Amino acid sequence: MNWNSWRDLIAMGGHGLYVWGSLGMVLAVIAAEQIALAARRRAAIRAIQARHPDRRQHGATATKETA
Image (cartoon, rainbow, N blue to C red; front, side, top):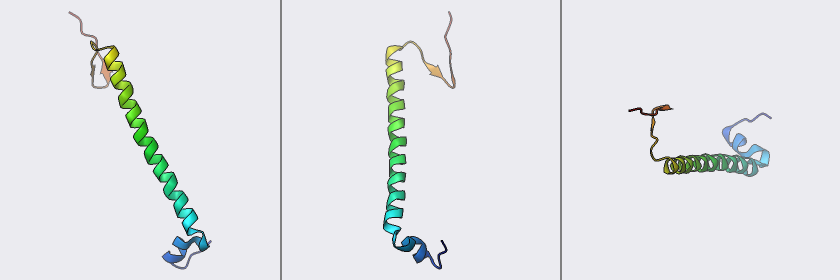
């Protein structure tokens, strides 16, 4: 489909509201999923740390201290 102007592109042949509304909804769901994923990750890390308070993670690897 060819558009002669930005207005034609946005209108999408009369289907612009559906097209751009759908795109907006997809982007909103992806953003919400990323936020929820980050929250679940933080909760899982806190749960693991609560179960093993003697272990601390330093950088990318966890080390076990020896006496």
